[in-house]
Image (cartoon, rainbow, N blue to C red; front, side, top):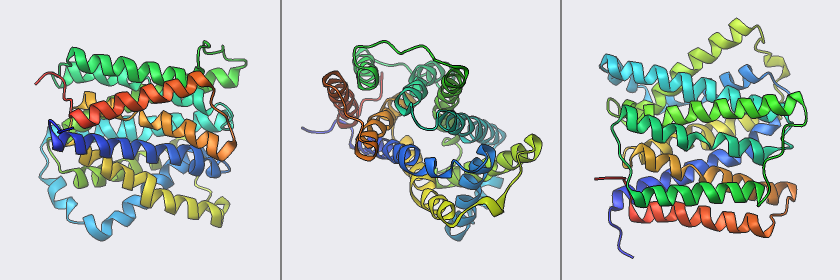
Length: 307
């Protein structure tokens, strides 16, 4: 099959890879940090990668200083939504349920395409074609089947589950907004500088959150295993995945990017099977097939909405 737009196809594939890495983070790595306060975890997961980036991105300061006010506004909004609020919300949601309802939390988080598509139309003037909408519906339907099969989502059995669901919804709105705002940011910065700036500003915001909420920064409570996980996240599923994501985002529309991010729930459920032994039912496998097919179609065809 010949690719209609190789650059867009590569960008979509890299965003799919970044989303899969984020799923590994959520299922395998971040749960091992549950002994630490959530704001402190968010601070460590941004501050340590930001320090490490200085080894090869220190020249980004010069380009950041030359960024126009519109770029600084986009950076501040991306760091606040996707960097701080979204990460705080999803980590807190997973910690609340002790990772026992991962699929529900992940699916609620992936309602972000609705937010991103609406914001892309409002802020970026994007239009989506009927073909893309068809792929979007197939992907969302696959994500639902993958998580719930033919059942309807059960009502939250207690206050903790309800709080976790609401926090996951907050994360969906925050990450959806960040997807669109990142396109605005990449109009002023390259993908590497944007990653550097986002991690730097989010570190400042996370530090302010730690100080204002009084949760503290209990460095003595961080075990050697915690440090190993934090370093692994910093080098791979954290900043590494964000580099891939921003590089891909420079080559596709925000509406395409947000659909490719549906690889996150797919990978999360598969990891749940491999790590925790959760077995998928027939309808869930059908959902997985629908989701993979829709996302691969978007990647291979280089769909970018209405040209």
